[in-house]
Image 1 (spheres, rainbow, N blue to C red):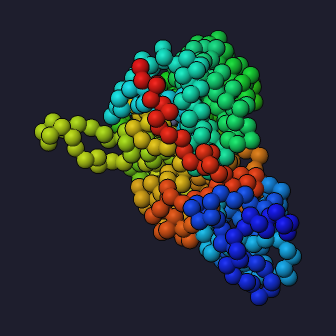
Image 2 (cartoon, rainbow, N blue to C red):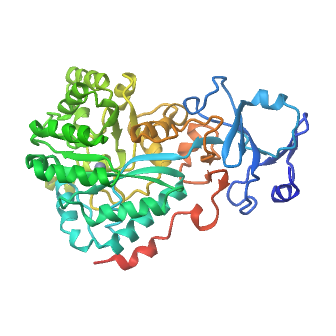
Image 3 (cartoon, rainbow, N blue to C red):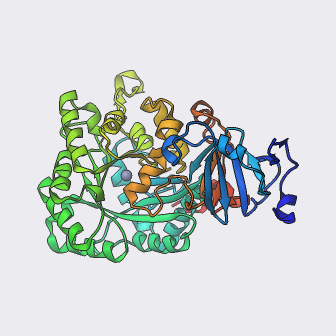
Length: 467
Ligand SMILES: [Zn+2]
C-alpha cells in the first residue's frame, strides 16, 4: 500500500487477526470524498447470488485493482489469507450490486413537464400532447433535456441505458442525431443504446420502412416499433425482414393497454420463433397479459418462453397510466382496480428473460420518476409482490437488462469485470428497499463518484425550458 493511499483512508476501525487494517467504507458524509486506492479490498459485502460467480453462501470480499475487479472470495477465505498490505474497506454487510442497466427509457420526451406540458391520464392523449410539442424540439433543447437525464441516471449508478426516439420523420428526427451525439459524449460513463420508435403502420409503405431501417442501421441503433391495439399486425413480418436485412435487434412496445383483452404479443412471439430472432427481440409493457384468463395467459407465456424473446416491465408508467379513469359520480376521480403489470412471476417461472425499467420520466406519460433503477426495483417489489427483491430480483435491473441490450459485460461481479458498482448501506432487502433512494455510493472503473457527478442535477436548471 502506498503512503498516499494510506493517507486517504480513515484510521483503521478494526484490526483483523491476520493483520489486515480494516477501515469503514466511506459512505456519504462520513469522511468527505476520498478517492479509493487503486488497489483495495471491499470486505464483508452482500452480493446477491445471481450477480456473482461464487456459489458459497454468505458475504464476500472483492478486490479492486486498476479499475477492474481482480478477485471475489467468500469472506471466510479472504480472512484466512495472510495480510498482503492491500488496504481493506469494511462494508459490514452493505449491499454491493453491479452498476445498473435501464433497458427502456424515453429521453427524447423527458422533463417535458418542466417545459409546461401537463400530464395525461391516457396513453393516446399523452402521445397526442407530445406530438404537438415536436415543433419545440430543437437540437439545443433536446440536448439540454437529455443531458440532464443522463446526469441523473449516472449519479444513481446506471452504466447503460436504452432510449427510444420517436420516429417523426422517415429519415430520422432531430432527436436521433442528438442521441447519437450524446452517445459519443457519454461513452465511458453511460453506454447509450438508441432505438427508433415508429408506428407499425409505417410498415405499410415499404420504401418508407426501408428508409427507417437504413437510418437505424447507419446510426448503430435498434429497430423499434409501436404495436397498438388493433394495429395491422399482418405487417409484422416486414419488421423481421428489415431486421434480418440489416442485422438489427428488434424491439416492440406492445399491448400497453387493458382493453380489449386481445394481445398482439402472440404475433411477435410466433415470428420471433419462426425467424430464429428471439434472442434479438424485446417486448416492453405487455400490460394486457395481466387481465387475460389464466389459461390463455399461461399458453401465451409458454409461447414467449419457447421463442426466446425478452420482456420488460415498466411499473412507474403502467401503474400511473393504466386504469386511470374518471368517475363523475364520485367527485371526478376513482381508485384504480387493475394495475397494468405484466405477470412477472409467471414469466420468470418459465425462464423468460425479464427486466424492469424506468420508461417515461416527468413527461405527459408519467409526472414523476428519476431514472433510478433501484427505486424502480423497490416500486416493483411492492407492486408485484417480489419476495426478498434485492437477493432474488436485483438481476432485473442489472444482468437481465445487459442481456436484453446485448452489452459486452453481463453484469456478474467476477475477476476481470469492470469495477462498476453500486454500494448501498442496507444489508438486506428490507433495509435497501426501505431506504432505496438514500445513502448509496457509486463506483465507476474503481473510482468513487464524488461532488456534482454523485448527485442528480438541480431541477432549477430546467426552468428556462418553459414554452
Ligand atoms: Zn416506452
